Image 1 (tube, rainbow, N blue to C red):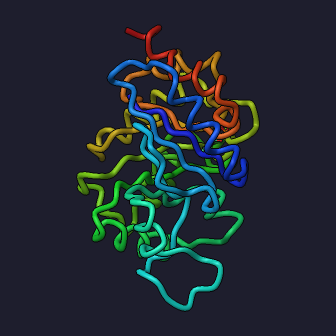
Image 2 (spheres, helix red, strand yellow):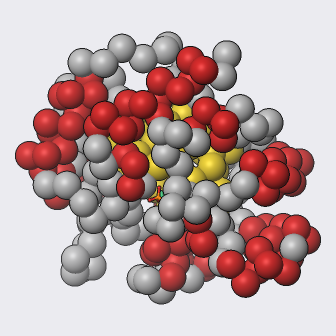
Length: 232
Ligand code: 13P
């Protein structure tokens, strides 16, 4: 099972270090694989068993890309994991599918583990399962889904940060549809909390969770990780 924490634009460098130290003192099941995505200013070469990834990066080694970080900056901290395609970057930062696919190709070539996010808006969900399937599959345009270091996260936009997770039926149907097309581990994200994590993790074809708000507090993320013990 994969437990990924996306801090988004939250926590300072000092807070991130304290978080990693505290989480590192906990004991988790051997099959709990933990990924942390701190903001770029908090990336570092941490002495930790957890995988540290970047929330975003530019598809270049280095260069004249004001405000961006590239492979050179990530390599300084031995970062080899990147999150690509998050709906906040698609919607708020206006990243196109073509640009997302370019990033994907670049970081695939660099051998990175890629946590690739997809998710539909509410209007599409309201049209039903087949509209959702079409929308999600279009988000794989230009993406090599056979890449062996790919992890996919299904995050319905209407469930992100709203406190309203998708229902078990919605997650089950969507993950079953994705599993027919894609071999990679499939995570669910969107209002995952300590009190719904066990139920979500026990759904077929859910291989883990990607957590935003409920990961910001280390005790809350810990509760989510230890919910693995309740689904065995
Ligand atoms: P929330 O857990 O805050 O809904 O965010 C989910 C998310 O976007 C993780 O990438």
